[in-house]
Image (cartoon, rainbow, N blue to C red):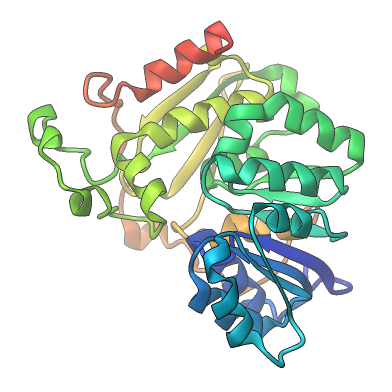
Length: 322
């Protein structure tokens, strides 16, 4: 464990979102052990320009073409190339790089993720939709290209760390933890009248708007069940969810002998990003540390299938293949 032996070439797809911002924060904490090939953003021209001026990638790409003139103006004289549009995002993803963060939200992230995988990069995957829509094909292409897909979602990173590939046949269950989100203690009637602002008020995690709303309804956990099935080769009936409001245990792997291995840590996205970045090693950085004595206790409860039907829907989709 320690500093990386040499700087890595890196691209960040979705650098202006919460995961992209956390990735750059981690690199800063690590002493910038990277050379940036590409930064891409959706519509936030100001933040993308600020990042590009600070990190000086080879190219900065704004997905919304309406922002290209402003981006070019802000980056004039910087030496950073400017591109725009979905095709340019995909081209940036395909640039040769050691490591690519795939953090574009939604189905828009699928084509760039595939491009990075086919280029043979190690892809740190924070885009749920890529796996949900095309998991088997995406993972197969990674194997063929000689690259790798390392999950960045805290739950799948936890399983990735706790699951010994040599004992995969002895796994009896994967148990994903869920914070319960802002509506954990709400009645169905109160949830029906919730405002967008209330749905965005996640108690533990600082995330983008879509992910925050998905978390409030536990739709994100349904998607994560599908992701886990594809990533770890476990069928629907061996994936469970438990509500854990403190978000300290990020997931568990239960083995055939009754042992359950859990990965614990303070809720901070930079930790699973660090795991993916340093893989197959570990890297030291000033990470927040877990103080169980101060925390006092961890609590758990079963999710309510009436208020949060997404879990059963995800299990049914896995059983039926659709």
